[in-house]
Length: 220
Image 1: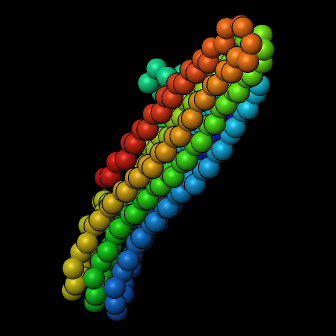
Image 2: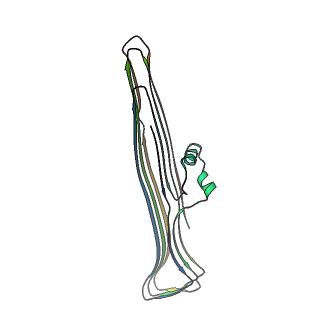
Image 3: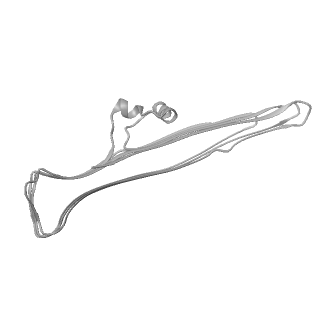
């Protein structure tokens, strides 16, 4: 029994005032918000009377280019970053910018960028073999889980090349970037061999779980 699941989220939020002149009787606000969330549930089971194999590959990405399961598996097992190396980075971004703009306002000036990424991943891979007979025989159960959760995001709030800014309130330039990964992997691997006669019976269970979580969150 084998399962492969891949979830990819990409996106940009841009708020830009470029080469303009603004006069306001109140507040001036330039704001960009980018929220991305992956909720992934993968439940797999393999049951046999002789040999059971349960293999689960699960990959969740925010701000990483689309990828194939071979590259993902290599990145999870070896700790590489083949996708970004070969395809280039594609970070999730929130950008708020005032560029070459004169501003006169009776209130406050706010430039803010907010980026939030959440991955909530749960995997259950159940493998069971129960073998019973009079001639013996082995009950073999093998379970493998490879899980990779990764984020790449940037939040940027800037004022550049603006020669004249006259405001009576506060000037606030703020960028925040929040990243959270919750990863739960459950893998029961059970083998039970019952010899009802004179033969030999063995129960063999093999379980391997590889889970890698990567967060790359920047602010400027």
